[in-house]
Image (cartoon, rainbow, N blue to C red; front, side, top):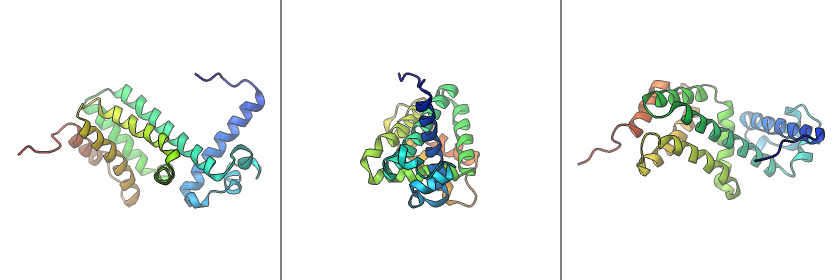
Length: 192
């Protein structure tokens, strides 16, 4: 467990780093990964132009920090969500409602997927994305011990969220719940 930071300068430095990460996510949502520079991020965070370069050695470090923060936050939310809802129909409904909220306000989600896809090119970024996928798999295990269904759900959640960004009318909670229920509750494939 990390010890709390008590040195005022370090606290201020950590706060600035977090502000820069949040600003990076806003820039990525608005302009894509290509729009990220130390200057644009510092301007977005309303910090001096040198702040991003001071706290992050390069753009790759800044993007990695933004991806890691996003994936770790999402994984922690998913784990808390799974713990709070348990198994059963209510948990699937609540997940569907949460997913519908996320795709209805897509800016943050768009930034996350821009960064998420960066991990496909940069293997060093993949551990953060794996933590997110592991959290979704933990949620699925509340409904099934079938490893194939668990793997399907992980892909389905990512696919539904990504596809939600591509439609003028994002999927509703009812539509999302029907998919989740089919994957986790109803037989995934009919036996011949």
